[in-house]
Image 1 (cartoon, rainbow, N blue to C red):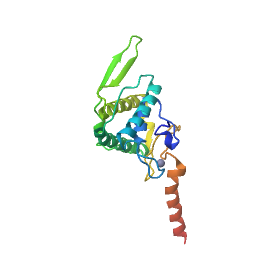
Image 2 (cartoon, rainbow, N blue to C red; image 1 turned 90 degrees about the vertical axis):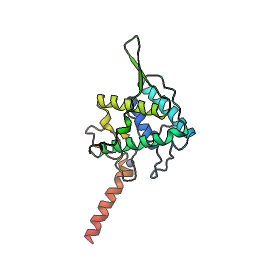
Image 3 (cartoon, protein in one colour; image 1 turned 135 degrees about the vertical axis):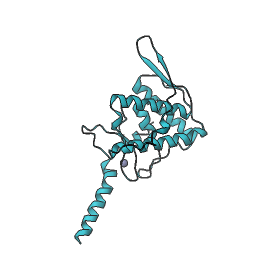
Image 4 (spheres, helix red, strand yellow; image 1 turned 30 degrees about the vertical axis):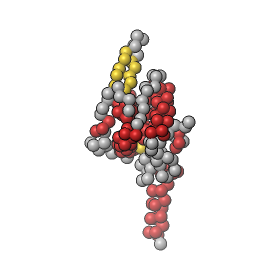
Amino acid sequence: MSSSTGRFGLVLAPGGLRLAQELVNTALDELQGTEDQLADPAAANGWLRDALARWADATGKSAPDLRLSAEDLPPLRRLREQLRQATRAQAEHLQPSAAAPAELLPVDIRLQFDSDGGVDYRPVERGWEGVAALVALELLLAHSNGTLSRLKSCAGTRCGVSFYDESRNQARVWHDSKVCGNAPNLRASRARRKNQQ
Ligand SMILES: [Zn+2]
């Protein structure tokens, strides 16, 4: 199964940060005709199992046993949009609005230190709060290792796909400049032509 991010032909963010990216990319995308993977519990649990397996691959930890019920879906979809707004601001070099990260705060995580000096972490809750807690912790870790500012949502007017900006100057604003960069370019060139007539 291709990841939600793979649907857009994009690479996954490094480490556990990919879970935040994968959550944003579950959304329906009108431009590219992708389905909402959080539309119902069956689809959402299929997505979550897959996303947690990729998270486990990237972090070397075992995937936590999280399950989503129908009641978990509305708050998880709200969290998805808040994440998109917060990371869109990164792409546009704006400060995220103060309201954006408010609901990302419940970091209810159990830490376990193992004998070789490593630390394991897993959410306490099993539903959407568990997903939110793991996402929040990964955002915090990414902030501390400097990768968070590279996670962006596309600045395209009808887009918002989450991509990881690997460019040296970290200046990418489109998830795909051919798809999303062209519309503004086209408008600009039409405006120029009109002015010349
Ligand atoms: Zn885009």
